[in-house]
Length: 385
Image: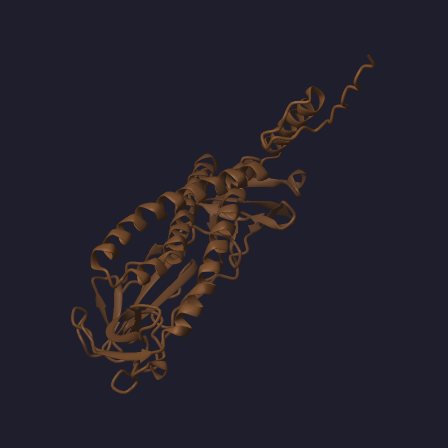
């Protein structure tokens, strides 16, 4: 939805000083990201060490063992959100509250090092679960967001278990919750009479206030629910600790405590696919960050030749090609170095090859690439004649 626009003009010198620090942070941030990504543990390899068991097969001999326990989720609680939902055997209720509110978008532009910088503020309206504080807007007058009195909230059952083994929902990594289809069977719209005009919309939302769903007004609210019901088959990766399944600790400070709505074999396959996807996603992001860094580093060249239209166009095209080539080169070298350092075998082989090379050069008195020898030969004294 279109909104109003305001601009602010300010000195560009401070902006360019900030850019210098941004360039430095961007470069080291990209390198650190790539190293961290290559050193990241593949959790599916850890999960393969778990002992797959039906929950009913676990007994005292499995205490302290890392298991993939398969069973049925159970609870004795009747959980509700204390607003509209009827109590039911839910283990988790996620209530999402969205309101139609105003938001501020700021865009800054600077033509060169010497010209003024301009910031444009645009005000639009959209649905959001986190409305912006309108008192902090650049132009607060006429762009007010009322306070949201109903908030998004997560509710957890206090009694969650599979068979006789308790689970800690506060730290258990659970798959995506399922959307709750709303109806008079599980919802009571007259439960809170202080809220006006509560009604269903397509059985997915509870809609509050005066506008329509298609043409909302500021402060109109819609509420949706996601839940985890009881009596679902689940596989939990963790350690048997007394009468509960606790997180499995590995590498001293890392843990695995995850649940899947499938068998252990498919759960491990899912974790392996997640690792591969994450690995390449961060690799791509690292390459993009390096390319942005190179683009910013040579942006001064654009400023110098900006007064020559043809030269400026040529420089931009050449810069685009060069920055991508350099970014891809730095990206590939960084990944290879990270893998070598992380792999003890590869690092050992490289050290051994290097040692053998220098040892051969010393024993055979072979010149090194830079023109020196490791062993100096004694000159032969002249013979007396």
